Length: 316
Ligand code: CP
Ligand code: NVA
View 1 (cartoon, rainbow, N blue to C red):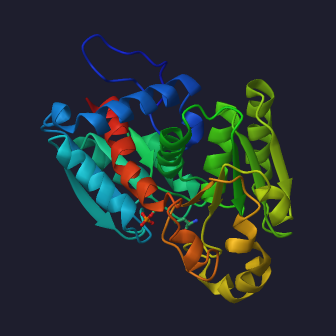
View 2: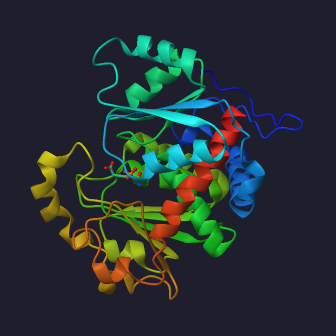
């Protein structure tokens, strides 16, 4: 679906976001509007019951999920609509362009978790209804938006705050980096050599940072990255689809474990963040993830609120 200019229609929450193939499909203005609508919907959930009555969502999963599947199903149901879930490789039985043009005849939106970003892009190219990325190899925009919302709840304005991401330069790191850079939030990423973030995404983030004033740092030193951070974020060392590399990854990432010693380099009062699922005693120790200052279950809850706002903007 082609991305159109945003326009808030009178008497409606709809904003023509087009697709959410990646974080790059949302403008800064749209992110801010999404955050404001999320806050309103979280505060006054009953006001929005039934606004999407008669609207249906397709949820396609090539990989497992707890949070994303639960929160998208709940989101559309709490708004009066419904969802239909399908699992397995998209396009295995018939061309992807045919899948897209079937689904658009029955449902008003497609949410897809895929191995390859190309699958999301192709679905968006062929479907006339909005396509939302529910995690690909390159991005996890719904997660990053919930995380931005969670940090705004904790800190208020994010400009000048520091988010440190320690571990793999993966899909979650990419989405967080792009959002932080656009919102003027300082972002430091520490990865082992060979596991750095995608160069093209880093260069886009640098362009955003040159406009917003965000400071971006990339290095292999976990302590330097965490130093003075307001939020310390990590994710699994082995993402879905990389299971064959898990032994070597456990070795390479061992110095990047977020434990009490590393976390102590953050600012006093800093929060711990993780998209979940977490592997305790790999990327994070139990004592850190269980801290009062751990935001992980707020992040999970906020997936629901952010996605409700996104669906309202896209489908109402
Ligand atoms: N954080 C997240 O996307 O979790 P799931 O893989 O359980 O959906
Ligand atoms: N980087 C992880 C995130 C899971 C929500 C993965 O892709 O498996």
